[in-house]
Amino acid sequence: MKETQLGSLLRPVRAGNAFEETVERLLQAIKLGVVPHGERLPSERDLAVHLGISRVTLREAIRSLQEAGYLDVRRGRYGGAFVVYSPPEPGHGDLAEAVNQMGAGDLADALTFRMAVECGAAQILATLTLDSAQRAVLLRRLADVNGAAPADYRRLDTAFHLAIAELTGSPLLAAACADARLRVTDLLNAIPVLGPNIAHAAAQHQAIVSAILAGDPDGASRAVAEHLEGTAALLRGFLA
Amino acid sequence: MKETQLGSLLRPVRAGNAFEETVERLLQAIKLGVVPHGERLPSERDLAVHLGISRVTLREAIRSLQEAGYLDVRRGRYGGAFVVYSPPEPGHGDLAEAVNQMGAGDLADALTFRMAVECGAAQILATLTLDSAQRAVLLRRLADVNGAAPADYRRLDTAFHLAIAELTGSPLLAAACADARLRVTDLLNAIPVLGPNIAHAAAQHQAIVSAILAGDPDGASRAVAEHLEGTAALLRGFLA
DNA sequence: CTTCTACGGTATGAAAAAATACCAATGAAG
DNA sequence: CTTCATTGGTATTTTTTCATACCGTAGAAG
Image (cartoon, rainbow over all chains, first blue to last red):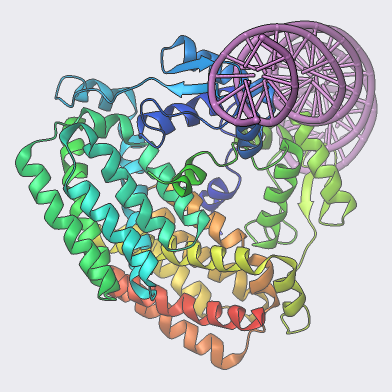
């Protein structure tokens, strides 16, 4: 076995210190709209347990997000950390900058990773026999994103794609898809959301769901690949 | 967005303490045969840097593996931590126990995850145009595993599958595939390696490589899926 | 057989993180 | 308007992890 494979296994045990990782995680949950504007984060005690860190460390992270203007923290019963954030108006302005902010290699890496795990998830879901509740979730997410107002589009698009991963029943796979999304969030938010794009995406979303419900793994995977390739090609264009 | 999606994003920031994670990582690198019997781990100083931990913490992990009999640590120049481990003789004996050791849900999760990322990796690799060096690596790994002695089979099989992920050029994807393998290593090692199985697997390996080189993503993905489904079905059989 | 040097072995102080316990505020319920 | 449960706020101690410096050893090279 070659040296290269050592790199895959003996890679860093932890990405950074607990504080920084926590800030990043919370920030992305906010930016992805998993906790929408006005909603409350779980209580500090619950969150600390879920994130596997101490409440002290979590509080430091929350405080920095509060100071950065992402959270409004209120105390007392029925208090908590409320999200104060609306996704920026999509536009070209920051895209080139956002692309340059992360390395070119990192971007290619993230795009490849996203492609692999999302195609894999759709493919697997298409092999499963979904019950009516699961089909309902999938169709609901599809309707949500395809009927979304521009301001809500990214959030519901993410919800749709994550739902596919979660319906596979594999937390590891869902986490991998969430992680893949996180790595390109800022870039996606900088992409303008145009009418024709949305219409095109809507057709692709429909094709993905149709293939999944029809039990066509290859079709589902290919539909996802085509869908993701659209934004991927656009982002790669900024690497020059 | 539903509560379920919170779980994917607000999952634990760290799996455990640095010491435990390091022990686990090293142990799996040994069990996977990435560092074969008699070979030396990188020096403590190098390893600490690669793993992103302090040398003190790394040493604690190494010492516990030494006491467990996995490593032979020698000092002085040309010294180091040498692997003292040969994969157990494959057999049914420990399989049921190994399956029960991890939860049924965890096993299904790991199998699904492995299926998704390995199919995704093969699919992506098939879309790329490989240069002669890359083709050589792939064919070399194929020849290695298909010509392996039973004692080396698992190690070279892992090397083959990881090579596919690494050839995509995405460290994230390679890490995900390595991670997926790690989660089923103990179970795979407990599966008997029979002649007919090896012959069957060899044909599947060949089919995977052929599809990749032919630029057939669907075929590559399907070939990987069939290949993995063999062991997956066997392992699922022990959940009853 | 001496030297050189890349390795593991050890010690110590600082910093980060966690565990624990307790305080304070809020606002709905009665 | 009092009660009370739930939430954030604070303080203290312990454990873990890190950074740094230095020591001891072995084995190849000369």
